[in-house]
Length: 226
Image (cartoon, rainbow, N blue to C red; front, top):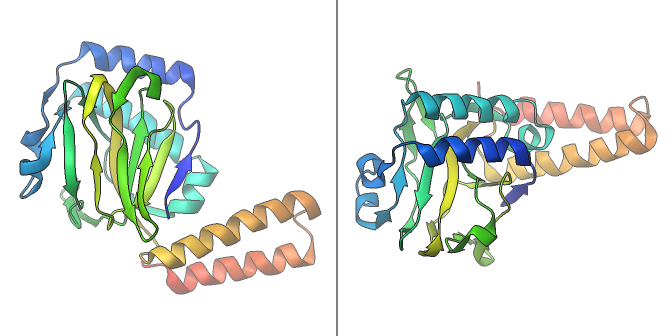
């Protein structure tokens, strides 16, 4: 499931992020690339453990922690601290699949079930730079407004096309979901969205709403990993 989530960050917050990021020091993105990624990765990043990366990353995690649509779709168990990258001057990232296992700063390990890109540049600020994700329905190009996020399976082959003008600035990160299977997670998301709609239409005390809510929680109980 490719799921765009709009307005994760409001316009004012995006402007504050960009002001801080435009003033900071960027380094070659290959420093953090492993294996085959070094051959196809041409971009810039800020140091993961810099004060700015930690401050902005914590703000993103705080926002996502109370975002109903994100929580419903991702069912997050662990989230890798957000990173920040910039593409300009013909930067690009060739076709690749994200690492299956990543090491968290606290030395825990996590499985990458979902990948997230949070756009911090509006499409009109740069040419090119589309995130291209391969799906069963073919390649899907993604270029969202600043403040919007795309959530997609980490198993997907994907790439960032060459930026030919301007700069593409984003935050990106991964998460391990409580529900590992993509299809099960998608069904739970669809069911939860239907329950929320019915709750508004009928009220939380409606028998069918209660019945569907029970099914939803029992499915999570069945499919979630501890």
